[in-house]
Length: 233
Ligand SMILES: Nc1ncnc2c1ncn2[C@@H]1O[C@H](COP(=O)(O)OP(=O)(O)OP(=O)(O)O)[C@@H](O)[C@H]1O
Ligand SMILES: [Mg+2]
View 1 (cartoon, protein in one colour):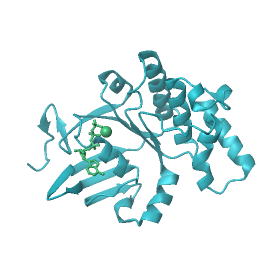
View 2 (cartoon, helix red, strand yellow; view 1 turned 180 degrees about the vertical axis):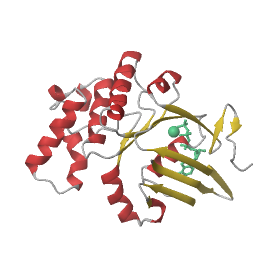
View 3 (cartoon, helix red, strand yellow; view 1 turned 135 degrees about the vertical axis):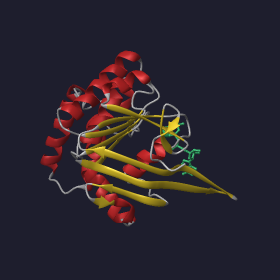
């Protein structure tokens, strides 16, 4: 069953006199529990697409239907509420808050939800346990390795139990062994918890963990350098 449906999805930015179009009429279907890797040259629209799916940005044109709801029609406030229930975001450089411990970083998204302190503690502990880093709960980001920081960031992304996880080059800053461990973890979130995952990557090795790989070029999906069949010229 389709979870995410993009139709004619277009994002334009005005730059002085010019209009740039990082996403240009993209059609995409992502089924429930998919693990999709997205590749493509720099500037091809990968992050732009993730930001739209994550409800951080809104399209200029087209529809983006997620679990039956066209989120492109939501107001900013409704979109923010939708996002906090539905999407976890994992970044290349982790984006942890340096003055907060691992535990406090993971707790942050829960502060937008109505939970008791005790319930929050339980959810944070479970998330840290799931990413295999419960013993580092009181460490600050600077006291962690890159791989450990990314685990904390993944715990933060899943602590609210969102059905969708988007990841923008999650292993881009890691050495090979840490990248492998992080990819195994992301794969488990897909296979064991049924999270639908959309991951941008520049590394062909990491696509081996995904169920399928699609390529973007100039804001559209392509196959081996050709526009996908059925896409308008
Ligand atoms: N907020 C913005 N305002 C203006 N232009 C933007 C904005 N966000 C993205 N762009 C432009 O849109 C294009 C696509 O950007 P995007 O970040 O989606 O590329 P990408 O595929 O993620 O590239 P990379 O692999 O380098 O991360 C780029 O030309 C970029 O400069
Ligand atoms: Mg990018």
